[in-house]
Amino acid sequence: MLSVLGLNRSSNRNLLMELRDKTAFITGGASGLGLATAQNFIAAGARVMLYDLNADLLEKAASAMGTNAHWYAGDVADEVGVQAAIKSAQDKFGSIHINVNCAGIGGAARTVGKNGPMPLAKFEHIVRVNLIGTFNVLRLCAEVMQTNTPQGVDAERGVIINVASIAAFDGQTGQAGYAASKGGIVAMTLPIARDLAPRGIRVVTIAPGVFETPLLAAAPEEVRAPLIAITQFPKRLGHPAEFAEQVAHIVHCAYLNGETIRLDAGIRMPAI
Image (tube, one colour):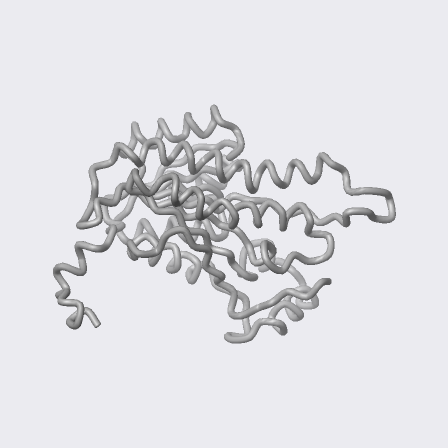
């Protein structure tokens, strides 16, 4: 196909944003999907700023990755905290080229249950962390990205990758807050991509299925088995490394923009 388009390997490389020597700001970077993404980026020659709540886990993760990893502990929905972390990343590495927003929380509760309606504070907290936190981080990272030197033939300055969930489409019973927060991430992907297009910044969302995160790794077989049963192929939970590879592909492929990608082995969640 490249030969038909008149592109050789050398010119094709000019269409890529390389990971080497780029700096990524990764939320939820202390464990799970965020940590796997950071490890993959480091292996590709990138630098990473890990942002999460748990300082002990952050320090341990960054230490294992070496001098190209830095960390800052804080809340994604805290404007001042995120600004401080971004300033720390700039002081350490110069700029930010990639932002991956993996931080998020769950929290199941029926709209009306045995003890009455779902507490409004619970709904607000889930939306605050997952949706408002994601927007808070990406807008502040984009402010820095727009000042980067344009890269490649497309004059690209940055890439933002948000993490939604299949719950945005297949929300189960008791997932009103979680599905709303993740659905909001899906819904804002295109308008933010349109907002940032003149600045040379792409925005893509991944909606993961069920992955081997620390939470599910510790779950009993009676919890894991039904989830595996409703996947199509392959019949297993996703590996964090597969998520990390999808993130890297989005960074490399400049024509991916304004879209949400389901990464879920064809799973469709039942109502309960």
